[in-house]
Image (cartoon, rainbow, N blue to C red; front, top):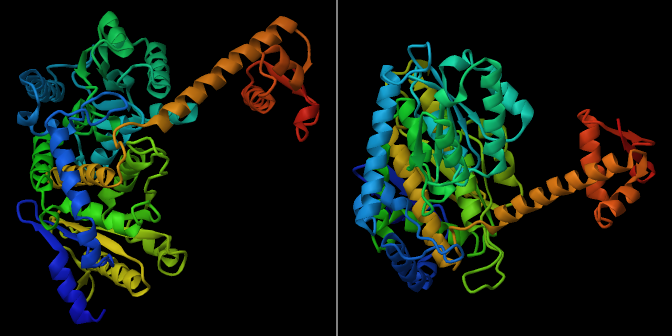
Length: 527
């Protein structure tokens, strides 16, 4: 396609939202009008599905749940007055609490102010708040935030080592059920750290959880500072606009009302049942085209702004957990999904743009552009050229270099990184995921693969208990095969070996004797 035709195609497919200053350009995706027409009926169904979802239909049939994250930024959409009131009241309570903490009306024992936050969560309870903190927290926030988002002991130690004073540090424990191992383990370890400093953990702790959950019961019985709700109609990966994301954001001084307003404004336009006037539908169209409706190409997300570095990690969960499904809504095996990875511009110029342009063409790129370089004037680094000009040049150059070598790309442009535009970006991709899921006929709102992984991990920990029980009972060295037989797990010798190797490496009372390069020759006993 020559330059004149490309310019016309750009104008034909450019979407612009004046209120948000947001542009979406899918002109460098090589679909044609016949392809768009072929999807017309699918999009009509997708628009109808999303409308029913927002009205309270059971959009997650496997778990018999409504899907209501859109109500969080527009409570008037909630299907009952009770739900509307709960959303409104929760937001007001979050703002009041954040103000009381920041002004010192709520303060730690013997101290005038809280200075830090430890946020303990996993998956959507961590990725959204991390992305928003990186993107929007002021340089000198009223409280500095630290995240524990894994059950890695070294990682927990490192976070705690970076906190100057636990006596002025709030702890957010975020878990819908209260039984998810990672946040539970983090809570237990952090609680012990407070106890070691002779600090009453309950005077520092906040629970963000479902009413009546195990975590809620602990918080109530121990008299924690307060609790905020999680709803069964909001999934973790779409929970940034709920208490999960708003509590830590408000405590850091981020304008949560502006974030909600930006999301609401994007929701309004992505509700439009017209492809060219709906940016989320345009994204879903581009994804469907690139992957042939089967996720055959990966999504490479390249934000050209340091503050948006974590956007690719956030989208990784939102897109892959929502769309990565074995079965469709009829129970047919379809193996759907879109793999997501990313870095940032212009770091990617020196990391993997080489492969993107000349390697395996198994991807499409999403370039995130921010028009404003900084809020003050920029000095020149060359005559007439600033550092921001270079950043813009790298983005435009990458887009062109990819297209010249038959690599497709999407460009999303925002005027600046602020609470409204970040809220809008989150809402844009949430809706695109929902529409795409309808196009390919899958449930975007459950995660059976995640649940299977949790069950498998629980089975391993149960096996560990049985193995240790055998060793304690026998009180002599046994072969791995003997241990497996007595534990009733003769088919799990390999898993038993790896369990014992881990315990041995951590001085947990397990002794492995023999040639470590030949596991079958080993004997095991307790010290």
